Image 1 (cartoon, rainbow, N blue to C red):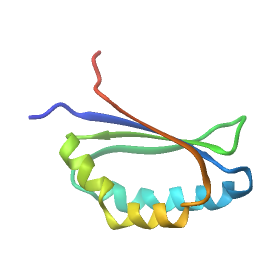
Image 2: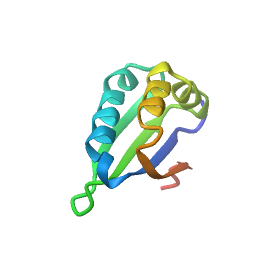
Image 3: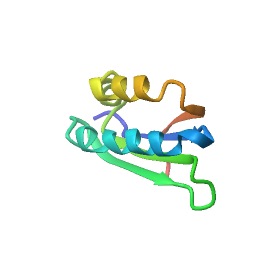
Length: 97
C-alpha cells in the first residue's frame, strides 16, 4: 500500500473577498469527503487574521489526491475565486513519526 499523503493548503484571501473565499471553501467539504481516498479534510480560519484559511488534508495516496485536484468541484472553486486569492501555498507531506 502506498504511503498516505498529507496536504496543507495555505490560502490568503484578499481583504475585501474574505466572505466569498470562505463560502467557496466551505462548498468543497461535502463532495471532497465523499471522494475515494479521503481520510481527513478539515478547513481552518485564523483567529487573528480572518483572511487566512488552511486546509489540513490526509489522503490514502498521492494518486487519489491527484484525482481530487482534478474534480469538478475544485475547478468550480478556482473559477469562483480566481481574482479573490492574494496568496496560495501548497505543501505535500509524509508523516514520519
